[in-house]
Length: 88
Image (tube, rainbow, N blue to C red; front, side):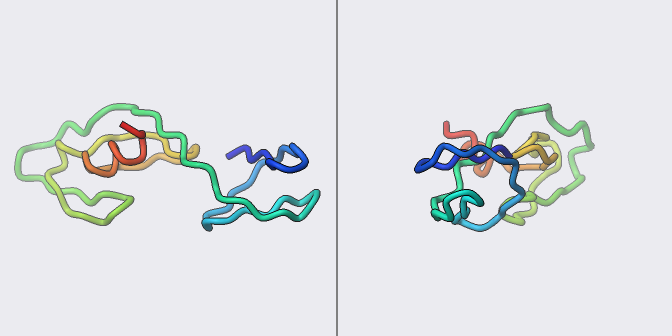
């Protein structure tokens, strides 16, 4: 993820997972921006195959999981988490 400091506008690549990010230039702490979520597709599986959401850990039918890229990493998301993260 590319972070941009709201104070000094310094840009850098970060893998921070916490709620706050610290700017390496001015040392200001600011909230981590919302993840960028891009839908790739769905899983083609039988009706009895179950899968786990990478965000909430809920077990759901694999066919209802959405394959997407969240902050540059591949993730399987249930419909609720996908809608919440995509901002819909």
